[in-house]
Length: 93
View 1 (cartoon, one colour):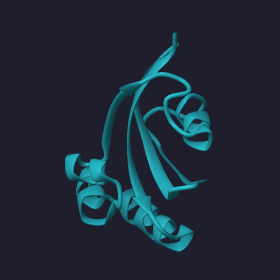
View 2 (cartoon, helix red, strand yellow):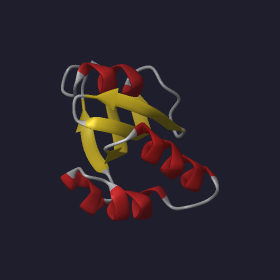
View 3 (tube, rainbow, N blue to C red):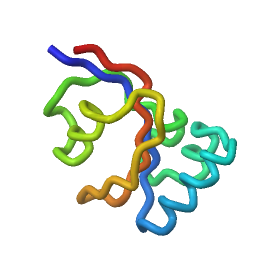
View 4 (cartoon, one colour):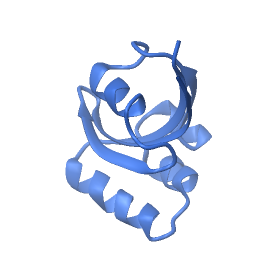
């Protein structure tokens, strides 16, 4: 079964998500941005979500994690929780 490790940043608005993505793409550290801005408790760990399989996260999040490019900052991804930036740190088939 496929497994993935990812980290994410959760914010309320798409605009905030896009602004943080720009910061990260300009060289800001993903973990530091997560600690400073993420609404998810995982922000305290730099956004780390650990390892999980398909179906363990909400559908929109899952779709990105199991089809997106590993190592790239993806998003904004909208879920019922808000807007996410997602970085897939590893994935196995």
